[in-house]
Length: 370
Ligand SMILES: Cc1ncc(COP(=O)(O)O)c(C=O)c1O
Image (cartoon, rainbow, N blue to C red; front, side, top):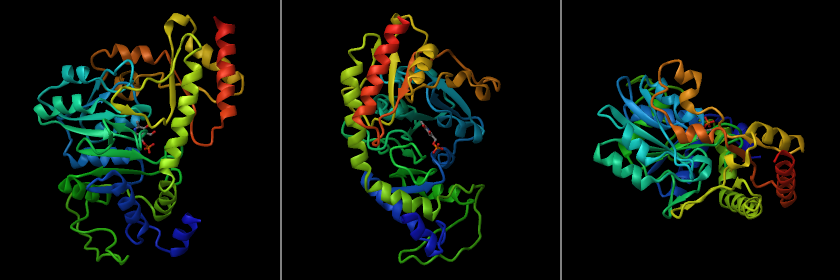
């Protein structure tokens, strides 16, 4: 409905229609953020944030070794050097201690990933970063609505990046992203980079009239724009965000109560400072079980249940980074977790019966493989 309204309006783009700005205002205000810049994806959200911070050749950007590839690839696209930090063994988020060990005078930014919906320890990261004039960019692609000490993630660092890909907490119809920030100059530059470096104006004025375009391009930019149909879909999803979060958290709590009793399974840890957004339900199969993770996952999948290993190849070992010489110092926790973690699904359409099926199947497989 919303997408067809956008389609019928004939104003299909951020430059000609009002849906993208409406989505930016709604998403930005919900966060109490200064502004919001919608993008074509979460990857391009991180890319414009790093670009607008001036990350470029000669700079280093510290990213966690255990995350989705797109937390780090924008660093390479900007011609900078990704430096991989280890992660915390309980939260699976970037370890401030490891970051401190990897800081150099070339460090320009840290990408703090709120992995699986669990906030990274922002105070510890900001303390290290501020002392050195380093920017902390939040990758909240998996963490809409997660809270760090009562604050929504994405609002704590210099910029917070979100993904609205199909399986994210809300989607803009398959692909989409956004960056929120209180820094006006950064927002202005992110808008410019999103749209071919065009300045001084772009987009739609109040009242929905397209601005006069000068076709004047101040710097090298990209086309990272969101479409009207994406934004219209996103607005509908956004209105249900709180309800979705509640359902996810309910499903996660239900599983934790039951899976925690199954011996060698550690359900997701939630730090005292955190409210989890329960994007994905990531468990650890402890090594004391003596069960190979691949065999375990295959056996549960054979019971007909959706399960997968969680990031089995740490980023430093990914050929895209390793073969280019960016493997860096060892990240022992990330390397160990790669062989221990598995993913279960807790999105809002998952029913209690589905969760019970997980518990039954996992119990059965643990007995069979022990
Ligand atoms: C942690 C993380 N960062 C960045 C991204 C990139 O988002 P997108 O797929 O929208 O480009 C994702 C998406 O899965 C992600 O999980």
